[in-house]
Each structure stands twice: as C-alpha cells, then as structure tokens.
Length: 285
Image (cartoon, rainbow, N blue to C red):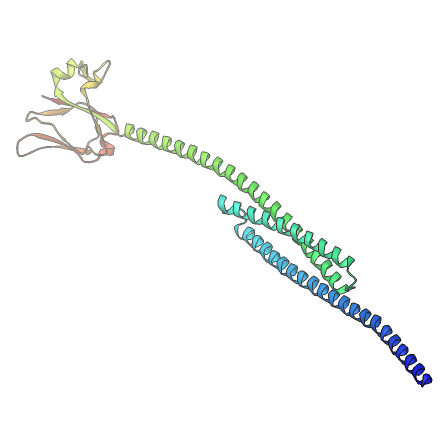
C-alpha cells in the first residue's frame, strides 16, 4: 500500500512538470503570432500610405502637364493678367504639394528603416516616387522660367507696340497735315478772281490804268473769289455791251443773251479759259 502511494506521488509530480513546460511554449508562440500580426498590419499600412502618395503624385503629374498645355497654347502672347495670376497660383500650389510629398516620403522611408519588415519592393517604390517628385520639381522650375520669359516677351512686345502706335500716330498726323496742305494747295491752284464793273469803277480801283489791265497797285479786294472747277456760268447782270479785258483763249467761252436780255458768260472749256490768267476782268460799256 505504501508503495502504491509513492508511485502515485511520482506520477503527479511528472504531470505537473509537463504542464509547467507547456505554458512558456504557448506564451512564446502567442507572442510570435502577435508580433507577426503587428508587422503585417504595419506593412499593409505602409503599402496603403505609399498607394495614397502614388495617387497624389499622379494627380500632380496631370496638373503639371495641364499647366504646360496652358503655357504652350497661350505662348505668353494672348494671356490676360488674371490668367497669368491663376497660372502663378497653380505653380505655387504644386510646389508646396511637392514639398509635402517629399516630406511624407522621407517619413515613410524612416519608418521602413526602423521596421523589422524587409521589403525591397517598398524601397524600390519609394525610390521611384522620389524620382517622380524630383522630375516634377524640374518641370515646375521650367514652367516658372517659361512664364517669366513669356512675361518679358509680352513686356517687350508691349513696348514695341506702344512705339509702333506712336509712330503710326505721328505718321497719321503727318499724313493728315500733308493731305490738308495738298487740299489747300489744290484749292489755291483752282482759285480764280473775277470782277464785272464799268470803266470808271475799274479805274478807281486801279484795275485799268491807261488802257492797261492789272498793272501796278490794284485793289484785289474788289474782285470776287471763285473755284474754276465749279465756275462754268457767270451772269454779267447787264443789258449793256460787255468786253473781256483780260486775255482768254478764243473758243473757250461764249457770251449769250437770255430772255431777259441780260448777258451771261458761259465758260465751255475751263482749263483753257483760265490757262493764261487766274484773273477775269469784264468791263461794262
């Protein structure tokens, strides 16, 4: 009986020892499971953050290309001040966004370095994203330079345009002045003077002197001014005989009497009639 009790005690001690050995093994396995799960969650989070960043950068690429198209279409020539300001604002916004993307990449890379997870694919993706950001920064710098260059060209063109406008204005003024002078000269060349008066009146005004016409000092204000281009008929307003005292070519005129018996001078060939003198003196006898 005593021997049976001893065997039972030994069995209980052995069972207790086995249970004690199994408990640390289970705890270690649970810790390993928890660690693996945590690393998996971290890896998924890093992947998701990279995917989100990739989407942001893709949007930036599209926006950069849109700005390139805007600048290419306008070529800096036809843009308005509002449109130029909008492009400048867009460029500044993209520059700020790129800086934020660069900082996020640096943070993500630092987390990856501290992580126990070794994922070369994530590292390669980070390197590719950094290159995209650098390329976009170069493009934005190029766009900024192009915009500044376009502004300089617009300023130069505006200056040239103002200069041309001034030149055109000056030329127009000179042309108008020349045309006015030409009109005055043409009018002067076509201006003629005539007088219809008695012998006594003509002598009083110095128009006839010793049977000579228009010699010495005569009264020019006694003459009537006319335009020979329009003067084709001259009513003499007298029934008495008349005589043309100034030289005029034969066949260039005719003197006729109307129904009221008044004489009328009809100039049939104005160019020939006034070719010898711009003055016409008609004496009423």
